Image (cartoon, helix red, strand yellow):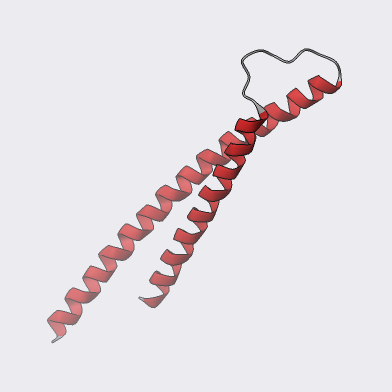
Length: 95
């Protein structure tokens, strides 16, 4: 009986470790997306300031639509990362 309990605990521990690694990977992706979002936001602010001062817009820069889609994607990624983190924390608390 104790052997079955021990096997169950070790399986749960391995599952929790895998979930923790997945959460860490998700946080890494979210951090990368956050940096990308900050870069795009800075570029958009620069372009808007240039437009207000009458300077010509640089050719080849991404459109505002792409920035908006990036923001939506970042929001989804952050939401998924938070959900995964909370699930892992909840699972770890049960152990």
